[in-house]
Image (cartoon, rainbow, N blue to C red; front, side, top):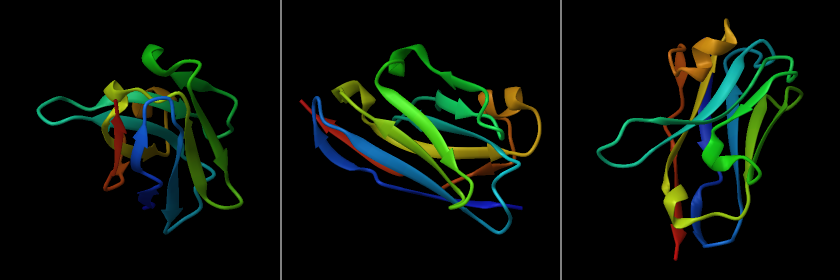
Length: 124
């Protein structure tokens, strides 16, 4: 089973940018559907973006459309999330989620594998 590790989080001012990366190990990432979720204290994890294993299907939550871009590089076993025009409400722990199966499974956060998360903090 694949293992996931997120990186790239940090502190940024409103309007700034960050690029998160989800690195996979243990087996090739190329057959996995992958999504990013985020969570704030006391709340459930929210879907942010997802990319299919062929990268031919991409979905975004409405609140990030036009600001965030998900991409994958299977030669590097990574899926990145480019986040632009960040807002304080984007502050959260961001998690990578992967599943080798139906795309809807990873959209719903019901897949097999999660990373440990990376903190993103956007200051006013």
